[in-house]
Image 1: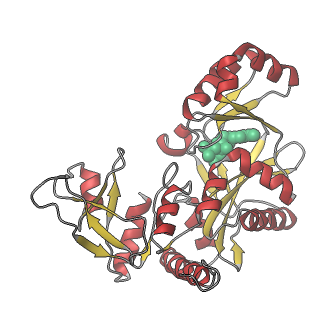
Image 2 (image 1 turned 90 degrees about the horizontal axis):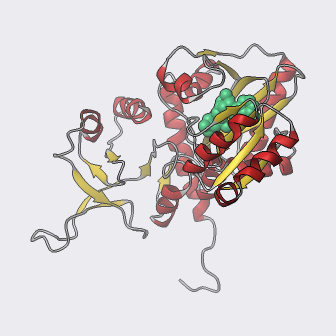
Length: 351
Ligand SMILES: Nc1ncnc2c1ncn2[C@@H]1O[C@H](COP(=O)(O)OP(=O)(O)O)[C@@H](O)[C@H]1O
Ligand SMILES: [Mg+2]
């Protein structure tokens, strides 16, 4: 859905676009109407393509079965800027960004480091502690620890006595694998579920929170939008509340005092810089309803990007329209690439 929204704008602005869809199995398929084909599920007309992990000017090659009679190395096209309208694992976690780095092309959004740190909630929280941005108390467990010593793990967490807890896979999103744990009897199932989705599991103290989000944009110069608020329909902002029941509400701007808004925006930009983000990120906060404390929750380096997603809507409310935002992101991708080119990658005159 993000790709659909971006594509509509790029076409309106008359950018020539090469569409590439990626199947759940990881195959790249391209064609003039790749998006429509993916939407209909009829992929037969699309061409399997790939990039090489080598700097060749953003070329896309046709992939064919080894040994087939027409198996020649055929260039299908070349591009100047990649827009990875991809969320989550393999799209937002630094892996595809690594390929784009090796191919030496400009691309929208954060690089390898910021993408992977943004994806790993445990490392991100450690980084925030260093940067002086408050985070809720949390503990990192490994799948191995959980599986080999469930009873002891449950007992240890129970003894902390800080219910409710949120138990979550360290690397995921969309609230998949996340449970709110109200008492000890729910811990075992929550840990088991989270460990199905990642080797690393985070146990976090639950905050009785308002959920506030800020959009950040820029490379060296960074700007933060007005904060927005989410009113989830579920007990927390679950997968169901995010995508299925459609009744969670967004308040834009969030009803906050000037001081709260300023503080949250400052934390958002500090987090963005500390993680070395580029292009864009949505930074999410928990505002404690009881104490008024502000905790950073997570950073999303490729946030939902449909016209009605929080990230662009916050910019719209802050004076940047959706088409302007898309063009700014392309310009930031080019700027970041130019900055990269100033770095020496060899020493002593060796090529
Ligand atoms: N420590 C916490 N206190 C209160 N609510 C939380 C906490 N952690 C997660 N949640 C709830 O779970 C949702 C999803 O958690 P989050 O860490 O943002 O993961 P995801 O990457 O899946 O969005 C949040 O939007 C919030 O509703
Ligand atoms: Mg979230």
